[in-house]
Image (tube, rainbow, N blue to C red; front, side):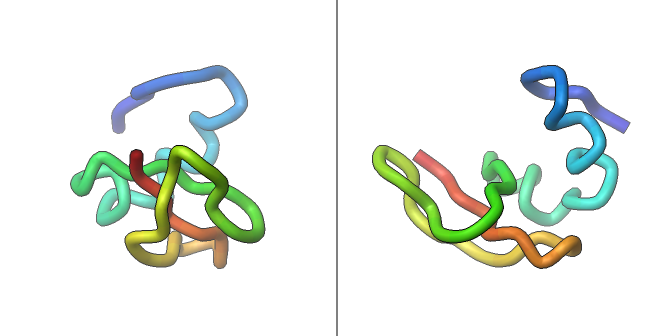
Length: 50
């Protein structure tokens, strides 16, 4: 398991390997600039990438 970034995101990181492989991060709701949507995380969040 990786903890790539910030405290509080680590719980998501365990679920979202396919998102993380694409250098994405999981956000509730829609992606906001400078991020754009690249997929969906396993918890239903949006997978977003810069």
